[in-house]
Length: 148
Image 1: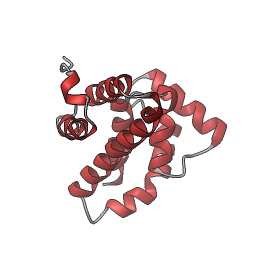
Image 2 (image 1 turned 180 degrees about the vertical axis):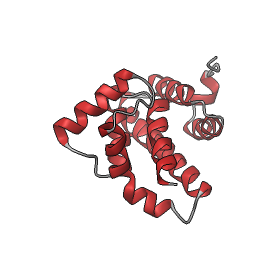
Image 3 (image 1 turned 90 degrees about the vertical axis):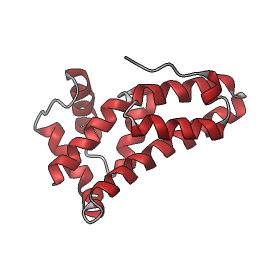
């Protein structure tokens, strides 16, 4: 069951960053998106885009740090291999989360070719909410499993 995200935890950018770190450590990805969305509603419009961008970059950096902590010697090699690993998942028809996500990934690969980096995949998937954050993390996790 999703946790309740309170306004007081997302109102100030500093406390929101702390909240995001805590939620990430507990694997509460829907709550991270909810927190960023609530913060955006409370912000002045001229700050909203910049704040969202910096907060989603924070989440991406948390993902990278987690993977690097788990296997520091292989991190660089995995990061370089990420585009090929992700393409392999799509080409083999692996269903990581659901058929809809697989369809979105096949469509992207067919139309534009492989992603060039983890960052490109992450921000493409977030754009227009093509994939929810928890599904993005599942794809990333699967590539780390394949690289072991």
